[in-house]
Length: 359
Ligand SMILES: [Ca+2]
Ligand SMILES: [Ca+2]
Image 1 (spheres, rainbow, N blue to C red):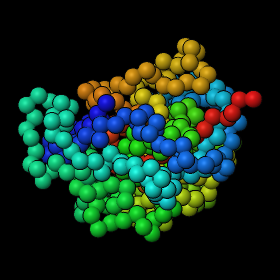
Image 2: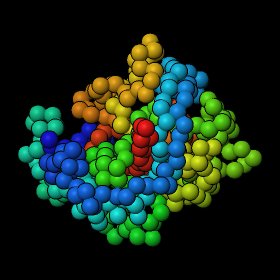
Image 3: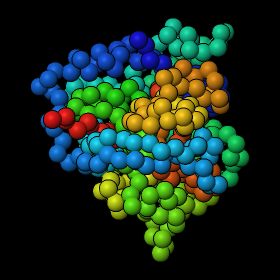
């Protein structure tokens, strides 16, 4: 099955669509995982945190929540292990070294494959655009309308996890930052190599909460209690003036902010995190009749009314260093966003979970 990057770029306009599209090597995630030699698999990760299962209220109907966060429903999840941090560049580098894995953003683009994912008659872009690359957050020099994301996202050929801002940039020196420009299948391949999996939305949301229960933020109802920043997000005037009052203009090293009460770092902010759930705006409505209240795994297929032709979108959680009060205050446990499976971006990473072995 070929994987082609298209849909995220569709929203950016034709030039970015065409620049942003590209096929994978043609290998399915499953075949890549199967091809990973047993000897190359990561050893058991004892740093994972055990999350004791239980019931919680998933989603929100509060005034601050977006419509697709509700209705709030009671959900039970079983115990599971979760990574204490987002997967870092150093961790991802070990995976690549062991397996030779090539991320989607690094793979060459095949126009014959790509055009099947575009509207009929879409013009073939110039060869100079049919090269691997990714989207880089590029703040404009001045205020721009906030109704279009092309004002701050730029397609940069040669961008991938090892060169997060394009040619000339490097992950070296950022070993403990979250890895970015990771497409869904890249995250899945890493998880399978590591003997882990990606969390469901329910697991992720449950783990993001502490004793604060259903509070607005992971730590309570105030964004900066006693003036303290507890997550890496965007302060200032989005997108052009980032005051970085929290200490970080872009990604921060993991563990730069206090953990939540479950011992998990950066569940809120820093980078968005993939979950395994397909996105639908009405997921919680599907759960509301009580038929999916135990370990729900999301709908059977995705649908995003804002991007109805998208073939596959997954839920991402937690917000990022780009979330701001002015644009998208998604630094809350119940926040959710749809992301095309092929959209590696400057502000999107992941962490993994693992089932608790049954006696
Ligand atoms: Ca920040
Ligand atoms: Ca995060």
